[in-house]
Image: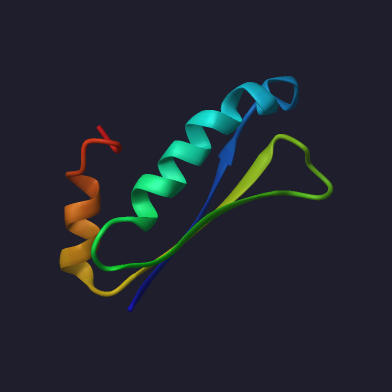
Length: 72
């Protein structure tokens, strides 16, 4: 299993506008073969900081994810 942990910055006043794109990314990624988990979480102390966590079965699944249409 591969775990990917990262962050993304969104202007706090643009968070509501960004949510539909984030929801599409989560749904499409979770539907991929080999995706064991994919989520975003807003930081409690920093409204513009989004924590990203991903879990993939193996490197092949992660590499396929990078080639998927929703990543392009």
